[in-house]
Length: 55
Image 1 (cartoon, rainbow, N blue to C red):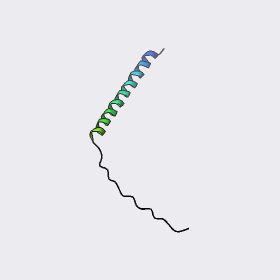
Image 2 (image 1 turned 135 degrees about the vertical axis):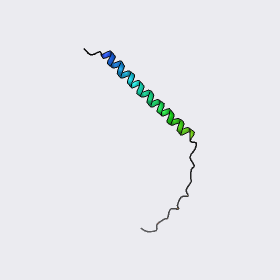
Image 3 (image 1 turned 45 degrees about the vertical axis):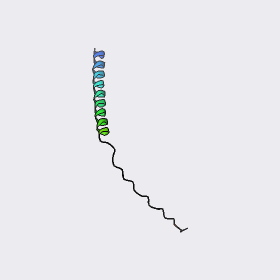
Image 4 (image 1 turned 30 degrees about the horizontal axis):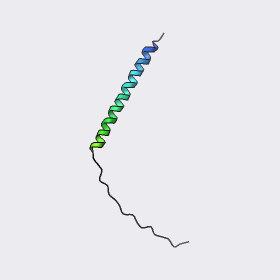
């Protein structure tokens, strides 16, 4: 008979390692994003809407 408890614990440990790996990667990416500073924004003028006199 398979050892279900050992199977469960093996899967649980692997799942926890995967989650911790994703959390670490997310933290690294967040730190990279924060350290970049604010982007330079360019405000473009709006074109005036032309009213058409056609019906």
